[in-house]
Image (tube, rainbow, N blue to C red):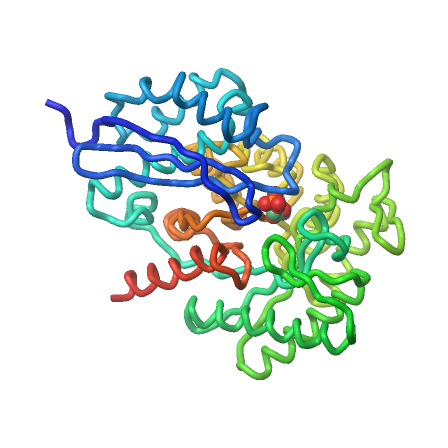
Length: 403
Ligand code: PGA
Ligand code: ZN
């Protein structure tokens, strides 16, 4: 007789992400429950991350699923998450999921975990985290450019993170900063159009230094108005404008040393509490110079530097490159590898930030992972349905934990 946790079937289909690009959604069926998950896509991807789709795109992933995966998962014990993930890697046969696509792997891996939690009758965050759970702090993008917007700043993201009395309070304050920035930009750029990037951060044609002034002013004003501490942060995504040994901004080019000094000055002189990817994605030493200079004063996060890979995180730990890691499941392709990355990060005493991608779906699994993995922060924008799908789910989870 089949156990309640034996996989009886699976399904994969193409759906669209928030940019209107195809991605994949999968289902795993058990006797009395099923799990469904869709995977997001990045625009500023790290070189070492899993390939989101094989040649031929999402359509080829679905074909691959029908040819090689659909029958293989039948009869597998869904409680064995790492066994399931290893099976996906074996079926793919490459080290970066370039045959099935990291997004198909992510959707299947997450769908398996969701099916189990549904069969157990517990929320996904409890299945992932067991007894040890915590509510993260929200980190949201409010002005940006880079690969997320045409005509925006060179720096990809300027973010805020309010420390409210509850998660709901914090995201409300973050969204007030977003609104205030819209007003400030309107005043500054009289008559000029103001756009939004892929993550719904404001995107306008202005120098990075001006954007820094605007975010600091808005954060200060909203902080005073709401009596809430609001931290200011940035994801440089520096690899996207690093070329031939220099960091190319709209109005200047910086050497490695100058980029390090600029990063440190944002923390020491402008009060930024967090910087993500301030240096090129292979410059472990450049990152380390920033981290050693700012010490515990700020959170230095590696995203493209690590691409959620434990081997690269371990390299960063040895070199003291950062003191935090960004976690995106589809950078490695499976839930168990992402869990391992979080564990490696925690053992080093570092912070973890669970993150959305710029091309998102309305799937809310990162809300559950942030709580179950006890991440320090969840990075999922400030406004927009696909961003709030995650943030509002954390609001529900917090209510569930308190009651
Ligand atoms: P993405 O980038 O476009 O690859 O999702 C987001 C980020 O750099 O954090
Ligand atoms: Zn990033």
